[in-house]
Amino acid sequence: MDLSFVTVKVVDKDGTPVPWADNLIKFKITGAGSLAGVDNGNQISHESFKGKQRQAFHGMALAILQAKQKAGRIVLEATSDKLQSASVVINTR
Image (cartoon, rainbow, N blue to C red; front, side):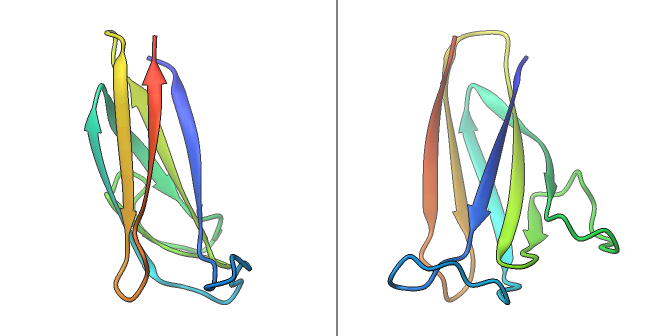
């Protein structure tokens, strides 16, 4: 039932962070976990922490994953219009 905090950073084609990016990041999770919450660090944002998407703030967003009681793999995919998607695999025990 542990939590994993995964930061999504918007970068350009050279891998340089884009601090003015405010793209809507959509999260999809499969496997042995669930999406416990999302954030972006913007203190005045009115977006829900319990949603499946979050507007990037200063080029970043956060997905909080929660493992289930059984061991397995959690796959998190982050997508956004006009950006290349990214994914990460977290193995749970």
